[in-house]
Image 1: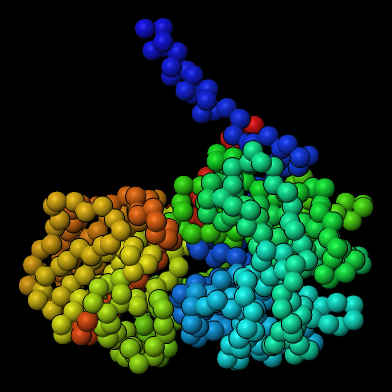
Image 2: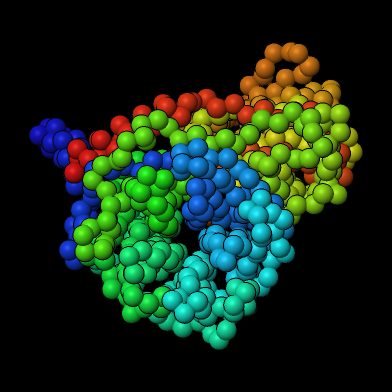
Length: 520
């Protein structure tokens, strides 16, 4: 028995450190020694990238947050700055868009509410047109133009549909053009899920870059696959290098890598822009990533053997987070859940005045920003009057949120849904309707504070491990301001302070990558 006790920890450790990459049974490529680098940390899922002369533009799924389809701009793929939103309010949840330029005009195609839509603009900064329904199902549209000038949308499941000349109407019904790549049967995936068709023309070939494997299942589920054809609708030949990019084991720094778009860099180097979860930080959502690719002499591409020079420093996203509400308009970082309603708020005298909505914080259509760090603190000064609550929270959905609120009765309240409830909860009576609230998210350990006037900070118990959120809910948590019912709230500031540097984060990611390579 003593021998068994001594051997069990060793066997367990050997099992944990053993091969974490499934065996490729169909001739697939083995992992290559390049690590994905983050372009945008946060839930910037389903990236689509357009190279427009010397400029790059990128947008993402915005789901049920409005204004939606935030467009980013870069000159070098390394430094990104937000430019404009393309959609103000959209019925349904906006998924996986495709940003393209055709005959001097910009188009964004995207699925929502059971159909696909198109918006257009003469300038990337807008104004953008009202959404036009294309009256066609499936998701993840990908635009392509044939040699005869005819336009098509590729769609999920390997389907395609013809477009009108102006690109804002479909002609006929979707038809099958591609069956996808055969995933080895012993790989841990979520589903076959042939999605995200993105088209690239190069050297006389049409390259179809797709996602397979499912987006949020096992860490090894998602992947980028490629096929090519001499025509925009096929027949398609799968790449001998599939999957081009994939997470091969749970020990890697990025999970569920997939949904790739090809783009040529300023120096002629090509890249794949994709998304993935940061290892252990699903509450951040699917971050936008980039990996270099290289072309073979016979016209295929695969993940590059090394990173080109110039990528040694962290990528910078020039997105404001804190807000003193000094202007007359909300900053570009803000989005309302479900609906942007200009009648609900105004900015005056350095304050955000927000009217209440809904009967719970989750149903209040809160005002949110995207968290872009693993560790950060958020803080606001709030004054309330009227019947309802106002406060600060981390918001995932109406069924998943946690935070602090104050009522007009001067009582501080813990508000939460989808998290474990403890028997003892500090909810002091403040005797005031003005309070400063703070939430610290330190690598998914959340602490909750308040203070009155210039008094000391008071830590409320209990605190929370955020990864213990309800498994059936969305993982992404956004800092949010909210007001419920008939409350009238005045937020005198919003402060967001990172508790880690991009350099420290990237060193951690690099160390994880080296460990995962050594284990293989």
